Image (cartoon, rainbow, N blue to C red; front, top):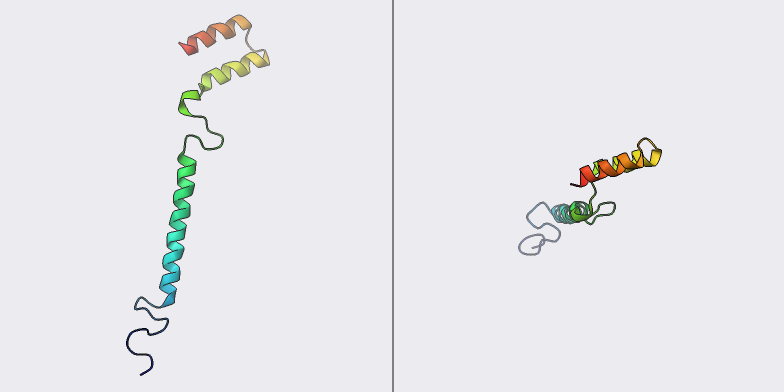
Length: 85
């Protein structure tokens, strides 16, 4: 008889072909999410420096103040030494 027994066409017991498509879309989305998460959490992601090469934000502010002329060279060197130690 047609439509009975093994090989019923597109019906596979899980709601048909729609379940298979949804399943693979979910798997693909999880893989894409995992790749994006891994790239963003990597210390070598674009725009991020490795932890050993990161500079103190205080030192950056000090350099900006010196570049703008807000502090003298002597004051800059003294504060830089204070921050570094």
